[in-house]
Amino acid sequence: MNVQDADRGPSASERIDRKIAEMGGWRGETLGRMRQLIREALPDVVEEWKWMGTPVWSHGGILCTGESYKSVVKLTFAKGASLKDPAGLFNASLDGNVRRAIDIREGEVVDAQAFQALVRDAAAFNASAARARRAK
Image 1 (cartoon, rainbow, N blue to C red):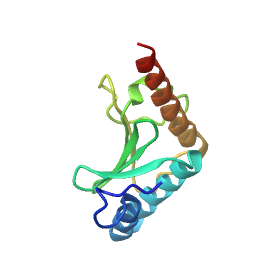
Image 2: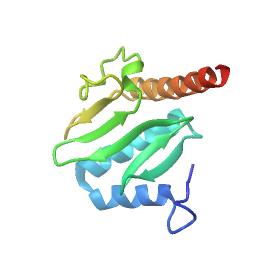
Image 3: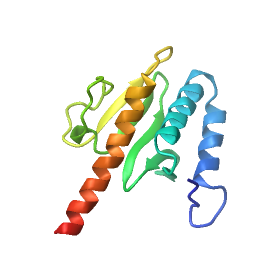
Image 4: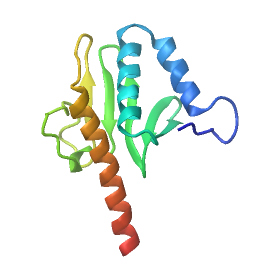
């Protein structure tokens, strides 16, 4: 699960731990909870640290990023437009052709089972896209 940034300094997982701790409050708690749900859904998920401080979860390609803003914790699914979302979790970045996001505001709770199903679907989509590329 830990990915080193060119074998320098702390692992990506350690950096994410530190970011969550530094955020504190509801945003840190929310990002920490969503991270735990991702790790439970896909125990072999890879945590990465990209774009000057963005937590990224990958499994055969990027699944989602986790960002924190003043009023929301945003989880952006790289290929979200290609995923089924029967629970209607996606509530942001709905106009694009590729990405979809979940904005979580203070006090909101995301359905854990629906979120984990979305994470697993994102991993399955990445795997099927990789198989299709190999078949060409």
